[in-house]
Image 1 (cartoon, helix red, strand yellow):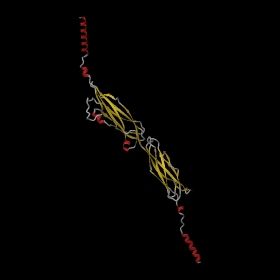
Image 2 (cartoon, rainbow, N blue to C red):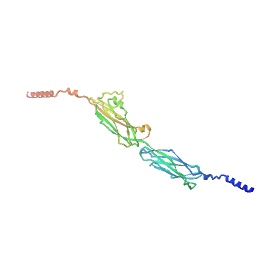
Image 3 (cartoon, rainbow, N blue to C red):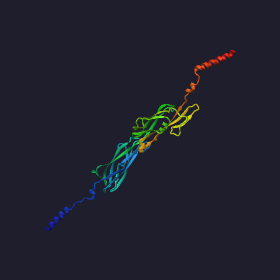
Image 4 (tube, rainbow, N blue to C red):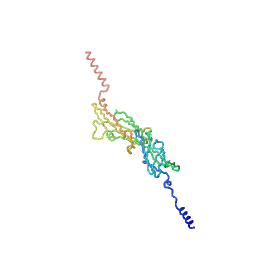
Length: 319
């Protein structure tokens, strides 16, 4: 009877001992992936590589050797990277993702997504493993590029003339840009007697839109000084006085057009910024000949003199 009781007690004690599965059986396959940077910059100006990349690290906290499948989307941009990686137990694996933009494509942002899932652990498929994602932003950076066509006025003019100088600006960059127009030596021109009016000194132009126009309305000096005051600010590059009283001055206009984006943010610029144009205009001031003309004999007097001279010749011949 005592033996039977001891047997029952032993069975109860065994039943109370917890049953712990192996540590390996308790661990579910898993992996985590991080990428740096998560904002990838791409320059697409002419001559740029048009590529950007990020480095990703896969970390395996388990005791299994894991094969991880990867899938990458990038908002229509070309991309490259591994389709699968092997991550050692308790270790890490690094890999690189690369994205490529199109030449001169519009400035903006695209979303890139890396999807990953554990395919096998120690060679055994993992049907219960779930997809995970890493999101990144691809930034297509702005660049400045513009062309200018200059429509020149007559460059040999008389005092008192009026005309205009026009500049057509084409925005060949990949985003809207602001362009600033300036006449650098305006003060000197005013000092020399010019009148200058610039209706607009700043324009916004869409990427690859029709050109916008800057225009400078100009009026020549009413007269030229025989000897300019060289101590004052002046736009005169050359000055000539002729023996007949004619005065000629050669004036230089110094125009600049500048991309606001490139100037303010220091972005990529293709070509010259600022664009500079120096235009030389020759102005002539001829002497007033009205006094010399009025001092000549009138036509009637000339005819009378000629008649008298002719009569005297006839008389002399008769004698």
